[in-house]
Image (cartoon, rainbow, N blue to C red; front, side, top):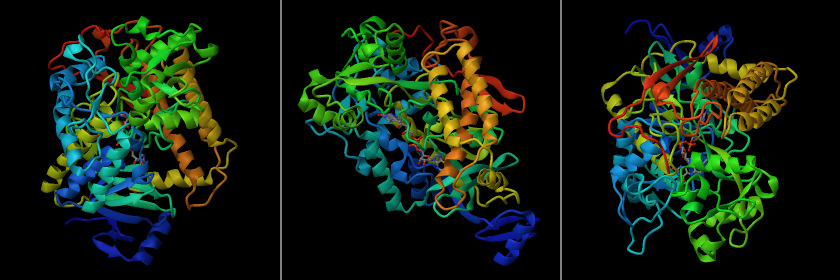
Length: 613
Ligand SMILES: Cc1cc2nc3c(=O)[nH]c(=O)nc-3n(C[C@H](O)[C@H](O)[C@H](O)COP(=O)(O)OP(=O)(O)OC[C@H]3O[C@@H](n4cnc5c(N)ncnc54)[C@H](O)[C@@H]3O)c2cc1C
């Protein structure tokens, strides 16, 4: 072995000589860097939602050493909040086919989804559902004991010409909760190592290889280096860029921001899904399951207004279309009492059905809107929900350093933070739990293959923790006049108003300038709590830094894409423009601003056509 420098445990290796703690400490002090803890694992997964835990389970079962880092306790990951279901063409109650699921997903994506990836996902869907069933997931059941399935928007029979199809596998309206808890039990059973409440802050990349991540221990304070042969990001979405959102507080774009900071591109970031039915003024989700079970949308005049916008599919048209329809009702003065709100009416379903099939929705409506849906309609408005874009990967979840074909060796990404791309410009409901599960598993399998041939850990660079240490030290020592919470509020309020359901150049330019101003003001923040032990001020300030970087890419992408496609709707650029924009956006952060490049959409089977419901 040649000259090797690196860390292990609280020791440090220089010129092949392992230095004990005191000596190592001295060296660190000379450099002005704190002494770090270093952990070595074959694979390190960042994120303990469905994607992260599925990947970890696959790796552990194959006999490799895998660790999962997570900012929140694993069962508090946002996957646990998913209500409605997970899609698979099981045909348990009526005719369905993998081919129909394939077509619906392609059409739902407004033809921007990559068809090779979509086909793989829908084919693997039934296998993943059966695997979940065998792990012990308590799905709701049909009278014959099969997995219960319900209607969901955009899932339609017979190549879009027929009626909705029963495709969403469900556990009442707590599907994400039961999937997440079952995966967690399995991970514990097989001995996956968890580092709970560790906040990953930076990637370690040396040349063309990823060597792990650096994280902050939220409970005790302190920087930890995670040295791995394989690193997988499963850090979820970033709905917290918007004021009205369904997303949990932890969904702050950390993973995608770390990728951006490492000089890598992000894909299709302009596509953010607004779910039509969040509780008015709060954003908390009332699942599409409520409409799947037969709920109506009603305006101030008492009309089922979806008749005008999607006469065939009505309340079960895809989300982008329903969100725009609701917003149009607001703009044209037909919101309830002239406010930004319409009604979701479930009363005709009857008390029994609501209690059996939608118990959580009833509880949420009672707690957060003060109405019992058995007796009163629920006030709702569109809410920031899902990120279609993310870290570009190939179909085996390998992160693409150039966004196109060149693998950043040693790095994978799966779930909502990744862009394979199976959702294109708009995701269909229930396809995301599926995406996270299928791609978590696929990432795990690919990592196992990689670990089977890669024997050694590659040495860590001496300055591997520098970026993370600098980030933390900078926030702890910052003493400017600005408060992070105020900057965050300005960002979230404006993102919802200016980069929301409908967009135009004027609003987006204004939003871009606001972000630039906020980024400047962020350089002058201070936090009140300077301690290192469970310092939520520190965590929130770091999260805000990530949100500001990623929001810039979302808005720049939205300005750049001068067409309407899926969830990205430019009122000043009407119509989908396949000639110029049937392509994925790749975006890098540079000194001069956001730089763009493009790559073609993979079309294998369905030629783009007009998307009508
Ligand atoms: C309210 C709600 C309802 C939904 N309902 C449905 C549904 O019915 N069907 C459907 O298909 N989809 C649904 N979705 C979408 C779906 O739940 C998510 O897209 C999916 O669960 C994402 O899974 P994930 O594993 O990628 O990420 P998540 O489950 O979000 O997990 C992210 C993980 O990353 C960790 N993390 C993040 N940053 C860091 C960091 N810096 N350091 C360490 N750890 C970090 C977090 O701690 C967490 O463990 C819903 C989403 C919401 C918000």
